[in-house]
Image (tube, rainbow, N blue to C red; front, side):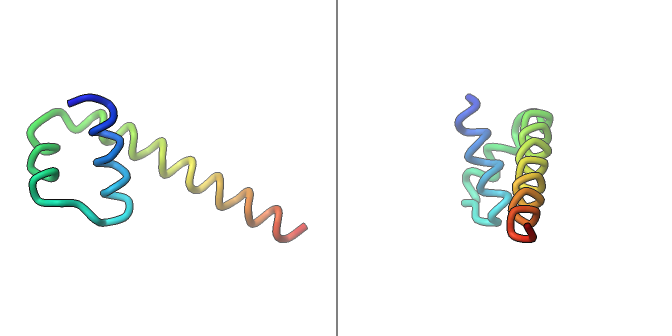
Length: 58
């Protein structure tokens, strides 16, 4: 699998929408790329929320 498929899998998991076929395909390989991408996206999401809250409260 290439990085595009892994990125799509992480984004689908974050939104909770994923087909059974994609889920099976993702569980056939190493989990580390998905874990890394998931941590990065969650960190970016939290930082974005903090920035928006600081901007609104100014």
